[in-house]
Amino acid sequence: MPISLTPGSLARQLGEWNVGAAPAYRELADVVRLLILDGRIALDVALPSERSLAVSLGISRTTVTAAYAQLREQGFLSSGQGSRSRSCIPSQGPGHAGGRDSALRLSGAPGLAVPDGILDLAYASLPASGEVVHRAFAAALTELPALLPGFGYDALGVGPLREAIAARYTAAGVPTTAGQILVTSGAQHALNIVLRTLAGRPGTKVLVEHPSYPNALDAIRAAGCRPVPVAMPAPGPTGTGRTGTGHTGTAGNGAGHHGIGNHGVPHHGAGGWDFEAMESALLQQRPAMAYVVPDFHNPTGRLMPDAQRRRLVKAAAASGTVLVVDETLRELNLDGAHSTPVAAFSPAVVSLGSLSKSHWAGLRTGWIRASEPLIQRFAAARTTLDLGGPVVEQLAAAHLVNAIAEPLPARLAALRENRDTLLELVREHLPGWEPERPDGGLSLWCRLPVPISTALAVVAPDVGIRLAAGPRFGVGGAFEQYLRLPFTLPPDQLKTAVLALRAAQDRLEASPQLRRELAGRRDLTGPPAVAIA
Image (tube, rainbow, N blue to C red; front, side, top):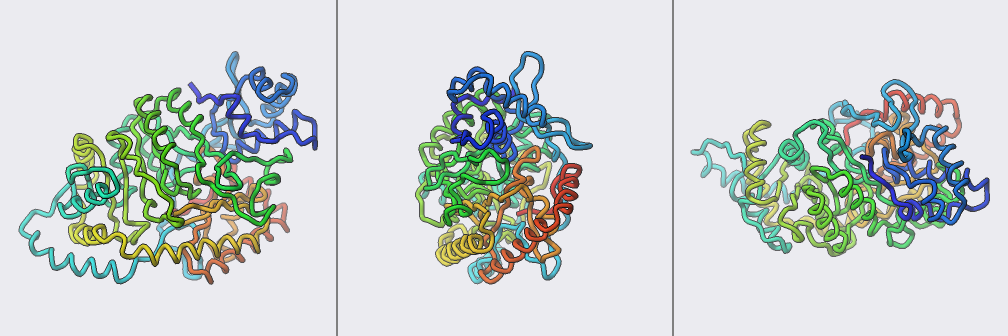
């Protein structure tokens, strides 16, 4: 049974859609189409009936009927005999089937290294925190001899690191023992262990935010699971997270957003989860697992308020869904906002963490926090993948976790400066773009004036940068009008990167034929295969 969108929820997403620039049915169809392309209406979602939507919008049923008919003709709605219309993407070539996901395959990305001279904007990651990491490894080497008489295998992880992680959770208000911690080789490894344990049967449903982290979506697909995307609303203009949408009725032009393209200020995204839609998806689909990033969501940078965390935990429990929370970016709190770990609201929550974003991805140290019975199940599943992690790295990681706040003030100050620099550069050089100002994390999520994300990613190497196209963050080809821009590079390199983006955009604007050719390539092959972090 597909997820159903209620009339009230759709009406809120539509906003002030009827501005009189065209017949009402056409304006309604244009804005619904834009919501689908932007990913704010996920694919295979049942739209409200014509009668109920007409009542909710205060218009005639004839207008809604005509709008739905136009969307069906354009390939954005599909319906069977006696069933409600469902959102989809038009079929454009081999590999597409109505609204089905054209990117079920893995990215096929090459190695993570990039050629010299290319600025990498596909990564949202920082260099090592210098002396802090070096000092931790020096201390680990002095502790190693005591462990050498042992076998070196430990599927749960070395004791000092598990104890340090448990103490960190306890200090944050989530009482935790070392027996509730499993050390992994990064958060991606942790997610794969969880998927293998909780969603190992082909076709298992896994609820995800839409957009979401590309490597998580790849892992879910690789496990044979079916992502159930729940759209995140467009950001509000003053941090309310209220839904906004283009008001001119022209898909892709971005008019009517309170973004940097219109008023010189970025969107704000606090509170930006559609919980009516999320609760509806949990109740109707009853997925085995839900993967969410409430702490500086990747890619939007939003922070979920505590009231919504409680609501999410309650809805997951009601649907029998295991809630898996990715906390990898939790330490990168740029504005000092308070939030409570989701696990504080329920012992059933599974938490994933990592040192990759806060300290250095080269550490390859992550963890799972869960109940002790679940940890034992995860450990059993882990041994089918590997038999444990490297000991020296874990000993070093224990020192880093015990002194986790040491490098953060300087790193957060630099990131705040980089964020503000990038927002100003976008305002100055890409005035039609609408970035969302993140509460934390490492990147901006930008709405483009027109749907050219894949085209930009294709031509980007020609101007000296590498990009991850917006559709890599979604399901079924959504987010063609969005791009993630990390602010992890130094300010001078950020300026170079933004000027390169402007050059790429100018090239596409100057050559409509090139845009059409690249759009055709996207329809047949999907977004470019690049490694993303």
